[in-house]
Image (tube, rainbow, N blue to C red):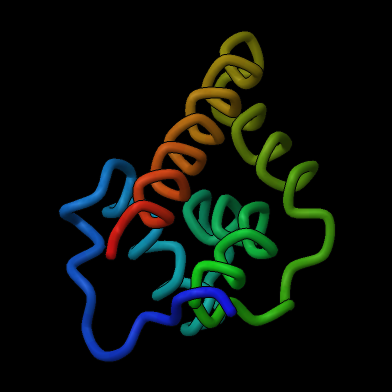
Length: 98
């Protein structure tokens, strides 16, 4: 059985934690931000790590990429990949927390 987080967790202590924390808050508030879309992308693994991530955003990968392309289409791909790397760093660190 996967470990479940109980009570407040200082997510900011983990790499990318600030972004995940903002994404979780934005999803809870119904805000579609870059952070919320990123958390939606990582939702399956985040759920196995004990985070309560509702299934509220369809096609988060495409939506995030399109949001990034709106502000600067030339760098959208590299910024998308950088965000996903931060998410994976967070997931890996969270998996090691005992």
